[in-house]
Each structure stands twice: as structure tokens, then as C-alpha cells.
Length: 236
Image (cartoon, rainbow, N blue to C red; front, top):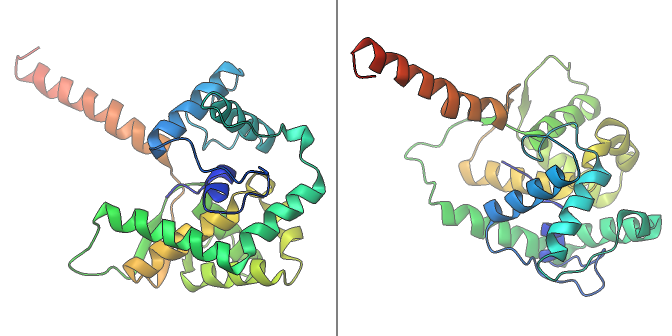
């Protein structure tokens, strides 16, 4: 699952980076992602989707800022965000009432998918940056070998607890291990935690692959396979 970004968090009620605490101006997540990707491309950042590791926090923020600005939501530039504002952002995320609002929105979105398996799986397969970040943090905080791709689902809740209570220098650990996700990891872990709760999983397998590989298989390799089959059957 993709993590919420800084603007998703503000839409859920933090309002720390935007004095007005404005709601998201995009009605659909796909539309938002497309708009941000287009801004990244216009900035000369070719990432095949903004989940790429080669996008810096500053570049992603600027692309998000531009996309929102075109919809009439004016946000500060990256340079204008002082350390005090980032502190306020984190404080806003970890506020109990605001966490409840974020959770409510996440549950609403999960319920809207209508994913109710007949049998709940014990193992969840995680794809994407948030789950890889959770793996890095789990390895560091719970002394797991990095080559171990499987983590306990309960670790996600424990990490969230450390962030909320600001324990064990957790922010320093986050900045050291996953600096590119400093502003997105909390809401990303909240989404992951709610997914784990919804599907009643006890373990998470962290895939080495991501959306790009899935896109390659689905949109390229499958089409090539179909074309080859048709060629063999004389249908080309």
C-alpha cells in the first residue's frame, strides 16, 4: 500500500504546514498521483512514478506543492518550512484527536474497497516503500538480521507507539535510516497498521519488488506473451 503524503496528513486534520489546515483538493488518489508525477517530470525528475527512491524529499514536496497550487491551494515552499514548523507537523500527527481522524479516514478507505476474504491470511505480503521502511526500522529496533524478509505484524504498532511517545531517540533513528520518508512514515505506518488489523495478519513478508516490476509484468511481459501466442497460432 502506498503511504499518505504530507498533504494527506493535513487533510486528516494536522494543518501544521498549512495555516488554514485546508483539505485535499483532489477527489481521487489516482488523480493526485498523476498530477504529482506530471510535476516531477516537468522538473526534470524522471522516476516512472513518485515512489522511486531517486526522488528527494525536497523534490517530492515541491511537486506536491505545485500540483496543489494549480488547484488553488497555496502551500509554503520547502525553503520556507522552518525546523519549528516541522516540529509542529510531527506534533500535529501524534496528537490523539488528530490520530483518530486519520484512522477514521483510513478505515473508511479500506472498507470502501470491499476486501473481505473468506479466510483471513496469517501472512501479508507487503510491496512498496512504506513496508520496506517498516522493515528497516524493525531490523534496527528489534535486532533483526537485514536479510530476514519477514517481520512480525505487531512491530508496526510498536514503532507507532515509539513515535507517539517520542521514545528511544526514534526520530533520530528515522532520520538516519529513512531520511526520504521522515514526513510520510507515521501516516504510512498507520495505514499499514490498519490493514494488518483488518486482515488479522500476524506476519508481514517484505517483498524486494514493487509497483514498477508489477507494471512491467502486467503491461509489457503479458502483452508480449499474448503476441507470441497469437503469432504461433497464425493470428498476427
